[in-house]
Length: 334
Image 1: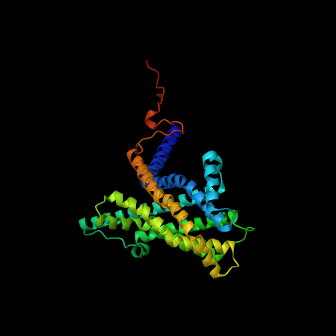
Image 2 (image 1 turned 90 degrees about the vertical axis):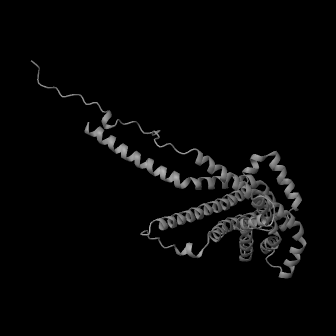
Image 3 (image 1 turned 60 degrees about the vertical axis):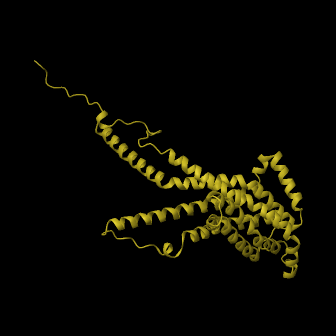
């Protein structure tokens, strides 16, 4: 009896502790679940077209194929054998890059909003209670704004994954035998990715406010216009940087004037293709990411976890008040 009561007490305490920790994580962690889920869904939606464009630009820069010939072959594969296309390494690389990028941007946005809300809550407590002592802000929060933190973290995530992806694709679709990626190409891709992330995540918010103040459009239409315009227009700057990085890998021995002539010859066509690439990647992809993120958070908020959930796997152990103890035999009755 003592053993069964002790096991019941241990079970109650262990299960209540696990349930409490689960509720705490559920309350604090479900925004990040929505952030990562939205990032994966948006990445899968935009990756087929982005993969087709990236492969075409790589093969055109190396001379293995033309842009339209490469895009036609990839488009045919997407339409007639999509299961094989989804298993291609280039598709998996592109999909992972955008999942990491969207996920980092979403998580940093959620984290910064939660920190701002916590700071406002402390300020309200300090106004209501004069004895409350405000904790000092951290050095990072004191000197780095939320928008800067989001830009730096998202740029770092996108830069590392994009450079890995571009180096692998350049070796797969480049000219000549595979070789090490030059530092000049890495530097060009760093500049390109910094500008791209700023245009995709940092600039659209302030730009939409400017549109809303100086036009009769609604706030939602201004957000859509800014999200579609910024990534596409920035390709005027990013395209020559991208071509320079690819040319350093494909032709490491040519002079700088030859590289400028190569960029001039390829600029117009590659600009059109990269603008078309940025429209789904950070335009429609950004809108889709916001839609999935908002939908997932609404679903999680609308379906909270119930307070008392029976354990699905552990056997039910009787509680102390449920244990029947037979009475001890007494003295014989006369």
